[in-house]
Amino acid sequence: MKRILVTGAVGQIGSELTMTLRDRYGADNVVASGRKTPPSAALRDSGPFEWVDCTDPAPVAEVVGRYRIDVIYHLAAILSAVGEAKPSLAWNVNINGLYHVLEIAREHHCAVFVPSSIGAFGLSTPLDNTPQDTIQRPNTMYGVTKVAGELLCDYYCKRFGVDIRGVRFPGIISNVTPPGGGTTDYAVEIFYEAIKHQRYTCYLKEGTYLDMMYMPDALKAAIDLMEADASRLVHRNAFNVTAMSFAPEHVFAEIKRHIPELTMDFQVDPVRQAIAESWPNKMDDSCARQEWGWSPEYDLPRMTADMLAVLGARHRRGEL
Ligand code: SER
Image (cartoon, rainbow, N blue to C red; front, side, top):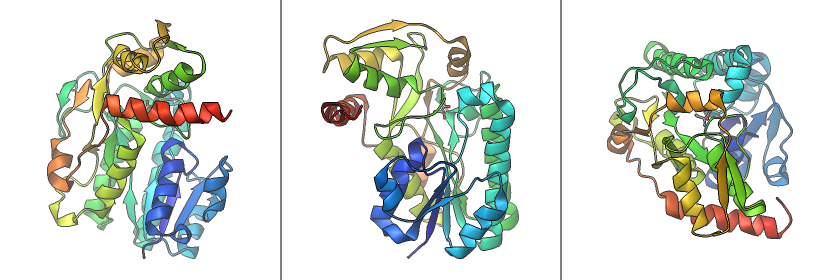
């Protein structure tokens, strides 16, 4: 059985990926790690947890050696809006942290999953049906770190034979751990506000299309890619993956079908609006579909129904 390390295990994706990996590979085989104490008892108590920070490589290497780790899901990263507020932090975590993890993977012969993002594109990219291989000149620090990270992963694959794989995630919508400081966070916040207050003030303008994905599909993408037959992979890293593309008024209208009293107004944040306008409206993910069978299960109506059912139940239990 493979032994797995998840970095950033307390974050939006990591907290759910860790639990899914523990179900699949056995709880003791999945080591969660991060800088913060896990807020959920399930994450804390269901398997090993190690307090390490990827910007400090020695403790990470010690954990990889001690648990004889085979696969690292490297999720520790700073998101786009925080990256604009704190560019040097974004560089340190997203680039130096990644470099340390790749070096440790090389030395310990680990496979690595590394997420890139829609943030790896910029205004000179074709923003409709964005191809897998295209112009990448992002104008955010987050995007700069994501493009450099994609290149670094390709380099470690070719130069050192490290089995690194990854996807370009769109905005991820989830109901367990909130995202921290991204541009796509509105599409999560609107669900919480719809349940709690039946109104939402959106920081992106109407008509701002972005790719999105429900968390179960994001987890499936990461695991399916890591389990894919390597001989079928032409790209390996930074596969475009998407499940839906919408603008704020579309998710609002879909939630309103379930909560008719919901209202939405706008208070545009120029920083996040500019970031969103520089990202694809809709990516072409046909390479992921062809090379490893990517196929999402949730579209906007199905995701909305599930989000509202889960968050509604948590609200009734007084958890929100
Ligand atoms: N969800 C991320 C962000 O908004 C994009 O990868 O920063």
